[in-house]
Amino acid sequence: MSRHIITQGGKPAFVVTEAAAVRAFLKNPGETFPDTVVAVILGGTPVLKALREHRGLTQAALAKACATSAVYIAQIERGERQAGRKLLAKLSKALGVASDLLT
Image (tube, rainbow, N blue to C red):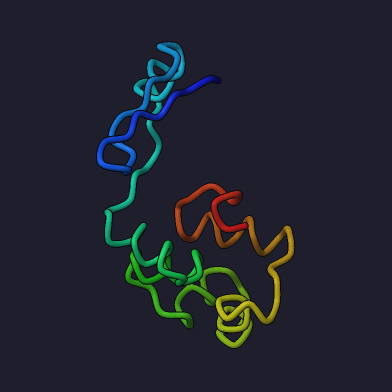
């Protein structure tokens, strides 16, 4: 897919892309997130933490939904540990997002 970004005042303002890509997105846009969620992620908050808080879940509630411990969730959010493939699948299901969004 090709795209061209047009800037105004040094900031991205428009994107020109293939019509087929736009049509595919419009058929199945997936979930979008509020600017506040994107802003905290861009500000350095781990994606898992930002999405967990966006969903209104505590670490304990997310851990329970994924059959793991809150300590493990906290370690993942702090970058001390990485979630394995099976846990990533459970996290993505519990948060309602694609697992590649969490990696």
